Amino acid sequence: MNLMLRWRENPWALMVAVNAAVFFGVFLYKITLPPYVPYIHLLVDYHFGFTKRALIGAVVSLFADKVPVWPVFAIGGAIWLITLGLFVQSFRRTFGFNREHLPLFVLMAGSPFFLKNFMYTLGHFDIYGCAIALGLLLVPARSVAFIFVAALASMLLILIHHIQLLMYVPTIAVIVVLRHYLVLGVTRRNAAAGVASALAVGVLFLAAQFLGTMKVSPAEFVAHLQSRMADPSQTDMLRNVHAFAYIWYQPLSQEVRDTWNRMASNLLGVPVFALLIWLHVPLWRYFADLIGALASALHRRIVIAALVLVSAGYLVMFAMVFDYSRWISNWAVCMFLILHAVKTLPTAQDVPLISGDDRKTTVLGWILTLIPRVGIVRPF
Image 1 (cartoon, rainbow, N blue to C red):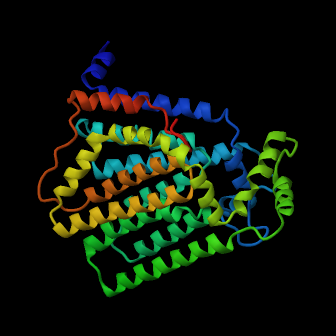
Image 2: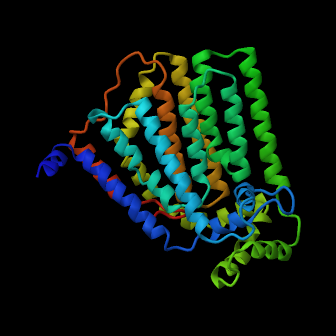
Image 3: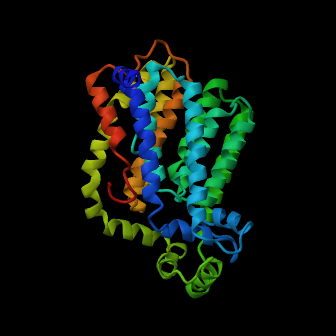
């Protein structure tokens, strides 16, 4: 009775509990689905030389010559738990866990764009960018070493999947600018470090994009993947190894053509994405108020330019690759991450918190809590 009374007085605490149950439910559902593409990524390594999207598979190959299916869920589950822990720690340090900040926590942690969708896309590599960005929100940022660590992390992301250059590397760059350059100023030393880091990341991306294409015949490549399967007798998995091997041969021009061929049908999901974004309106309003309260006009302009830059990267992805639900979800996550970084900047006035007593905000919180995920290509 006392517990029910406390939850009635503070429904946001109940939302946290319901979200935890939804996480578990999505996980139980996810492990019933065959992880075709994520499993193939664990089979691809550097056996035939430098290869795009091969870093995780190459690491797995150090520990196992034959790869069963379960590591997709084990590795994906581990990075999901790490990301959850990093987010909780980052939120605790940036905002603090108290009753006043609970609505903000629920609107981010309980968003179907964030941890729920990462659970549904378990085995895909988007979450690695988020985890690294969260780590960069937590580590000290006053040394030039912070710039090099961010660059090295970005290069690892590109080796995992080169699309991270548009997905999370821009957000990582924003975090570096907000946490290092806006705090310490631009000096000859950190400017040189930034330019060198940007060049290294750019060169690696070009190498992955244009030199990482598989150079042996598809038959030889598929035979190698089959040799790494723990159970090649699995007909469905073997069939999909053949079906998705084209990923390592397809040039960028073909990816763009495929995306535009599907554009008309995929655009039908845009109103749904717009509605999902609108459901977060208390969060966006708080973010806008936070930017408006920054003490420096220069800081405000830089933050707004950063948001435009990150969003432009996602627009480019929209034109190139058709996993629209994933791109929208990761764009929202990048906004959450940048919000954390902006909160550390000096403000000229207090920013009103999201009211947990507002009826509309509470309804929106419940709606977001009960939406289990967004999806991969089309909404839901």
